[in-house]
Structures are given as structure tokens and as C-alpha cells.
Length: 283
Image (cartoon, one colour):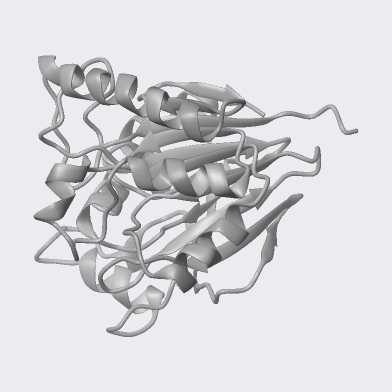
């Protein structure tokens, strides 16, 4: 068995819109951004506002540049992209980034993100960014990022989105599903199949059951859904993620207590946790 560990760090765990303030200090108010590293390979999942503090961390680690990473965007709804222009490593000509995501209903991934980052919405067009960028549309086929095997899969979200399974050379695996709504039996079977045997699953848990009844079709899950999927798939540990902007620390702590109790009945050997800004996991 290879001794190298994968490292996962949450930089943003919120959905929809950032909510900084004293009531969100514990779990965090930045929107979706997760850093994954294995050896020298670095993957950044989504570019919500959490990517800005990640960028500051990278600038401290690589003050003279020479940094490279793959940025995978599950989709380009605002909460997963509006931190991107404020990611400072983009503006160092010595840095290199591959940026990828799924094709959307309005065309290629590259054209979509280029339309967003340009005047009058932002003063610097993406074509003027000094770092070396390779922007690609990713098909629903597995590929490699260095030593990490990446399996993209379509999830149930308006205008489409990808979830990702990451298989590491040390035999460990991570499934990341940031925006996903319960679908029919065929769709559930697909998610269970992709997540089968994973060590960790990070999954959208924006609502509770009562809230979800009034938000069907919005593309997000009640927290019991990922827990039931994880139990069926034999996932060892679940991190609930993509919290509603109205869910303050007290609300999320109460949700955590209920979620642990629910999951312990479905998977007595499994574990349930809440994603939190700054939390690091070694796998």
C-alpha cells in the first residue's frame, strides 16, 4: 500500500450566496470551494467565494509563483464561480491552471465562463489574465489529474452539473456531489453505483424534509437523501455540504445531531459529519 495521503480542505461550504457574520462563524459563510491534494497534484473543486482565501494561502506558499493546479467547476451558477475573478494566483504569469467543467445548455464550458468574466461585469476579461490557462469542456468520461483518477458524472441540477469521484493511488476514494436533487430510481441507482465503497462522500444537504417540499426542482437535497444513498453505497463517512444561507450555526448544529442519529440507524459502522470552513481531512 502506498503511504502517501490525500488531503482535503474545505474553503467554502455554503450554497446560493455567501453569508459572513457572527451567526455563521463555526461552519463558515463562504460558498463552495474544496482543495484536494495528493503528492504534487492539486485539484480545486469549484470557485465560490471560498476560493479567495484559498488564493491567499497559495500566495503565501508560492510568493514567487510556480504554482499549478486543476480547477474543476461542477457548473457555473454564481455561487460556484463568483470567487474566480478574485483568486489572486490567476494574476501571476508563472502560475499554470487547467480549468474544466461540463458543457451547458448555452454552449461550451469555455465560452460560458468567458461570457461571465468580461466588462461590464468585471474589468478584466479572462483573455487578459496573465497566468497560463487551459480551459476545457469535460465529457462524462474518466480522466487523470497526475496520479489521481477522476470520474465525472452528471447530477440532477438545473442546466446540468457534474459530481466527481476521485480515486487515489493509495487505494482511498472521495466522491464530491455539491449540487444534486433526488431523482427517480434509475438516477438513484447511478449515484449509488458511482459512490460504491467510497471512503468519503461530500454531498449537498441544503434543506431538511419540510423545507424541501416547497423547493422541489431547485436542484438541492434534503439532508436525509445523501445519508440514505451513502448507506446503500457502503460509503464509510459522509460530510454534509452546501448549506442554505439561512442556516446559521445553531440551526446546523441541530441538523448535525438529527443527521447523526438518522445515519447511525442506516449504517451503524458509518460516520456522518458536517463540512466546516478550514476543516482538513487526511485520507
